[in-house]
Amino acid sequence: MKDVVLTNHGPKPIGPYSQAIKSNGFLFISGQIALDPASGEFAGVTVQQQTERVLQNLKAILEAGGASLSHVVKTTVFLKDMNDFAAMNEVYARYFTTAPPARSTVQVARLPKDALVEIEVVAGL
Image (cartoon, rainbow, N blue to C red; front, side, top):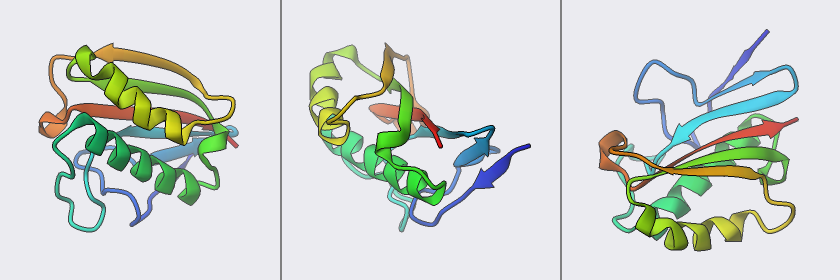
């Protein structure tokens, strides 16, 4: 059994996928890029600005699914350039201050809308 989670406080999906799926005590949130939920436009030109918007989007979707950042058990960070790791990590660390989740970070050739960063999360409920 699975339930779709959708909130206006996160960007609408730009393809055939859900913002998040709640199933078997977990919340699986699709990778988020720096889209402003209100306008649907891209927000930020630096990796710091984009990471901030991505984490705000993730936080809103988590809340819509009945969770919070403290429930996140695993994240996957996709970076356009691994040289941006320290800048992304500085913003990321402000959101996950206590018992941070397990994380993988990988460099990719290209992200949707030429984003600099995309993050997906899994949260326990």
